[in-house]
Length: 339
Ligand code: 2RA
Image 1 (cartoon, helix red, strand yellow):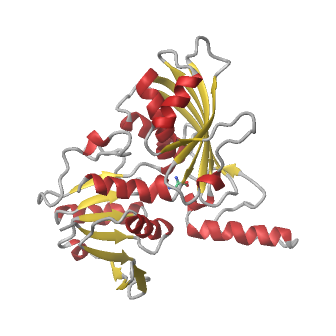
Image 2 (cartoon, protein in one colour):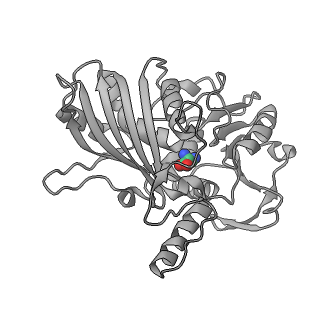
């Protein structure tokens, strides 16, 4: 029978989406544990017609657990993922804690499944598999099919990131501020120090000494690890925009070999987990609302880069649901690879 599953951080936005995705995809678990902080322990958690009680996360929580889906922040992952691994669990970690650890595969199942082919369920030997950052997943779902064909030499990414990436409280604050501004009131700024409604600002992640913020450097470093290409040049600018749960990204690509827009469009139409929305006549292209609560990443604005010669450059525009494919769906698809 199927694996025993534990969901760590089950009361958060991604934790709730783990349950939604497990249910949507009829994941064959034989048992499931709902784990969260002491604060949430004891609360009811209905799932698939059964009433579960949220348990406090402890080291013993992982006894007999085959797959542990983590999304409770980096410090919880750092403390408990190794303990789960010692007990033989396969941890799929949505935090950034282990993404750049040499011994930890960083996996998008449609892109680099081979990176986790050595990991087995119930082998007695636990493991940690890292879920990439949401903006990386969305970017690479759209660009990898093209990279495989013409080899990306350089990628310039501008992201327009949804509130959900900053958590459920940020989504609530965006809604509250929008109402307040429309009512002519002062906006409540608890999560972000500046007004978010009817505004946009540089991503709230800490800014590093090189002037990039952590979100931008995740895109640079995670792309190189996932593509197993330490030479690919990546630069990024990540912006937080007043959108609820789907990221948008404008991506400029420079290829080693020529790649024309029609070939690119056909390749993307066939790519797993990708839909093409690219109607120039009607000016219909991907939008965050169109992809929200859906599995697929949408790609459009596929065009030759006029600043590059000989079809060696393309510009594309991509939208993907940050909580679903950007986090929970990708993690569950990693768990499905273990079945
Ligand atoms: C964000 N990538 O959107 C982060 C969420 N993990 O802020």
